Length: 153
Image (cartoon, rainbow, N blue to C red):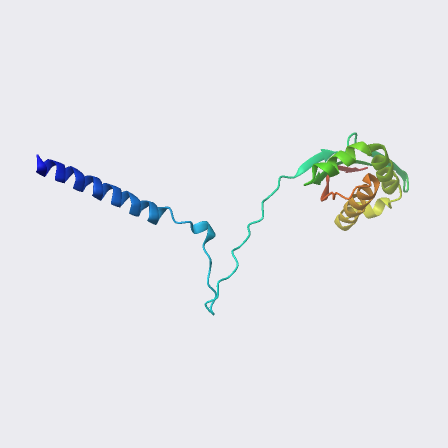
């Protein structure tokens, strides 16, 4: 009987010891590991920036602008605004009449021929972003304007 008790105790001690060493080996905190530089000094741990999801808002309805450029021509344009801050989108919604007015005035002032080139479209996109940012009167930043429809006729 003593032999059985000694064997059970030995198995339990070995099992507990093995489990403890496995926890120590597998449970090491590798996320906070400090990297040593060539001089042997401890370097600062890297801070991983959290990625945020973009928020999109459509400037509906489409913008339609007429031009008299050697005949009657028009531009039809749909846009999406992108931001990472909900406050900027809320400010955009609250100031939509001012935003639409500012964009219409900007689009109306464009030279029709300049809108046919890729450089002209990119310049227009940058100008629209700046115009919308000024119209919403917010410290929160809009990141991008995307043209989702761009029809010249």
